[in-house]
Length: 134
Image (cartoon, rainbow, N blue to C red; front, side, top):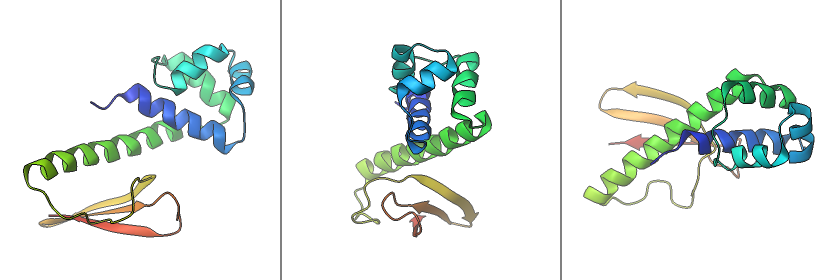
């Protein structure tokens, strides 16, 4: 099962770590307890819209950007879950070889019977990989 609170927590943690900031710094700036912010980042607590707004403001990141990243991660999780279900029914050879995780979907376009999804592998952000779902 995909939990939105975990995806949101992952995105908030990545945003904080990209800035090189500590939990203590962000919790102080957002006026949220360190423990509670930690639980939100680990997906153990649901963040209210007010709390999310305070955290985004403390990170100086628009909430829309955070939610867009959560939406991208949710799309990937759903694709992964769907692919796992299909793979269980009819095993296929892996298409991506050594790529074990994906950081973001950059585009999705439907062009007839084949769907093309462009993704970025985590260790080589400049390179994109096309995946064709049959």
